[in-house]
Image (cartoon, rainbow, N blue to C red; front, side):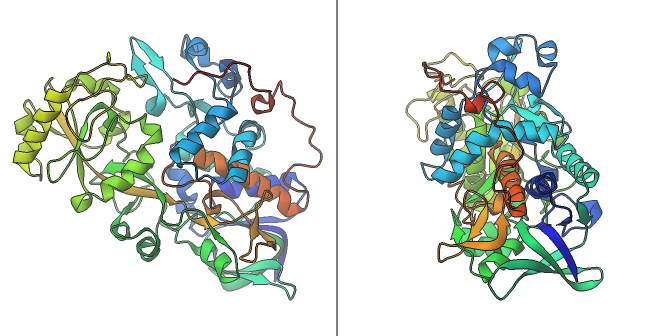
Length: 520
């Protein structure tokens, strides 16, 4: 029997944030149990775009993470808008219809800047601007949206690789092929270890605290059917094929309280030919998120959603699920040549259908051809009201007289050749999780914290409902992973020796400006 200070279950961004924070807080023996073999390590983190949404109050704050930003992108400082705590809160409230957990969301927002600095200083991560996903080229310049614009170098692959390197450097004991199957408790009820299935068979590892950071249940078709309903049991998984909800089940089995939106998830429009599970060489390259620049038809030949309701970073996680609910879980994204330079580079990872006429394009698709042509002509006739077209803002260029309307970026499809990518909905992670307190201690169904048990990452319930804002999941993983690691060592959610961060260094700590920051 082995005894540790802290056992961390999982191998992604949240789990490593917890493990490294525990070491930083003074834990001598920290073991991280990765269910996957070494060649498949990293959970969903490896497959992510690695974008982080965080507070900053002026453009020059970004220089901390990308020091040469003005050299690479002249005019960046003048063109970027601050992302205040107030704006972050507005975004979370908007995409969750006001259902985000008030205590947890406040922690996420208020700690986001300091957690980013910690990610850089202690986690040893390097950053760049997420130009390929978030940058919009217009008028010869790159325009940046409000909010999430920074990612780690080499995206999820780099984020995961660096975490493993950092974990090894600070002395975290990383064990592969270690599937945790049960939580153990002493006579008082305190969680004091785990039972793992390893290459040596079943083993019991004891610890002063256990942190669960092993993701949701998105890989589990039976749970998807149970909690999300049809047709989620046949959804393609765009990330790890190891997230079966093991940690959730173990915690619920000993009385943990389920919390949050268990019938909700983060889904993504992905190319219809994507594999059933994420391919490590493709990572997030199956995503197809440029739909605001075109139209989407289902197999009945009908438009079914407002493609231009908002920037894709605020709609894609919701629209991915809506695509899955369409007949045959299939839709067609159609563009003309006016917008080809606005499509994300990820579109180049698969070949589209092409034609010099809309009729020729539709003829190649498995679709109600008569209705599809009718829909496209009606769309073209309804386009062009308001504007002018500007992909960098909500431009108000909309349709009139059709349902659903397209409320922004509604240009006619009139410049050949025309291109089409068939897409389906790929599931990324599930929203249902466990209730935790401010120290990330798991709360039991009697509303009392469970001694010795903590959770972080996608296992934290209550933050996301209905929809999701890009970059907030990874940020949550770092914020709550760091809190869990520190609290598990016994020092509470904040490091005991750390001086209070000054407002000068921490934009989130500054008093709000007298004048409200203008949105977009």
